[in-house]
Length: 160
Image (cartoon, rainbow, N blue to C red; front, side, top):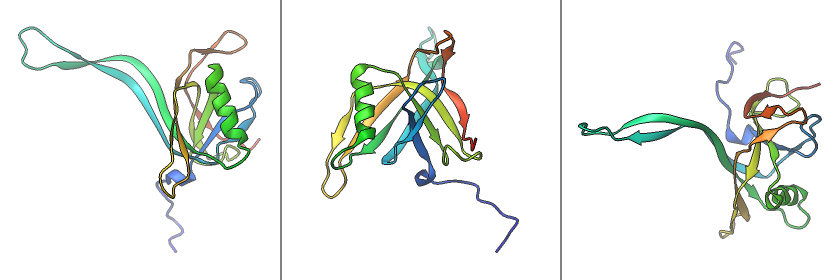
């Protein structure tokens, strides 16, 4: 065994998605254990601009955006995680999501945190697959109790 080598990548199954079930100031993170296909889109929107006398359009950067989606495989019977997520969506409430490359209580875990609004969901029920709900999200216009804006940010796990 080569003891001086370490892994360079991690797999999607090793990542973890959480939502905050308490307050921004004193969060309680709940793992969304049956989440899969977590996708995010970040960066500036690009707009095509037409210039007189030019034969091609060019792109210019617009506003930055943070959005994405995840699938949640429904649980038979009581499903408190699904119920909490759908309740937040129905109420138009901001929900904080954290996506890490490991457990939230692991100091080595890295990822992002963002207050989001949840969008229209779609359910699929294909053959032998579990019933999955696709849940889109987008960064919310969020402020904390002090009036400070809360945005997308890099986030690390913590064992304390």
